Image 1 (spheres, rainbow, N blue to C red):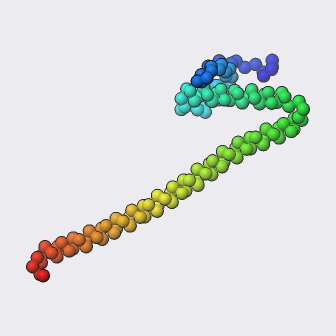
Image 2 (image 1 turned 90 degrees about the vertical axis):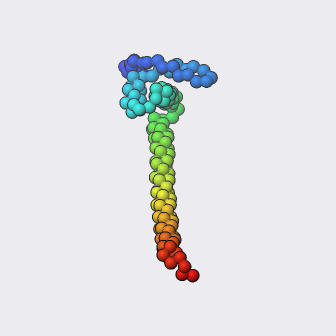
Image 3 (image 1 turned 45 degrees about the vertical axis):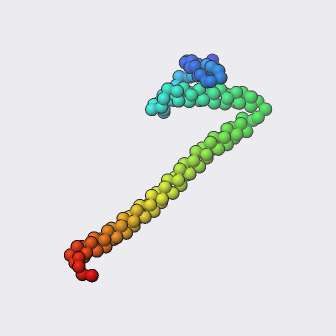
Length: 142
């Protein structure tokens, strides 16, 4: 952030078991998190805001210290990091889709087995009913 790009900051206190850290949250980050995570708890929102601000500070520090790197090299490294993160997200989505397909297959197989057991039980019940009916109607046929 420079003198031409001044944003108002809101201070948020993040408490952990070890220490208390005061993190300045920009209005842009606050608005983004409040909009995108409207259904989340206040604690989740606070932690997310702190994470975003930490990432911003780290990115700014990296950009400032990139004096020995060319701007193109730095941008390439940032793009690779983003692609890596996005790639992991895609892999997780693929794993979820594969897991869902396995669950569906298991449900279908179990449903088929349940129906087979019900048909077998129905057949046995019919045979028992026929035998009981015959015994009831012809008790002395032996």
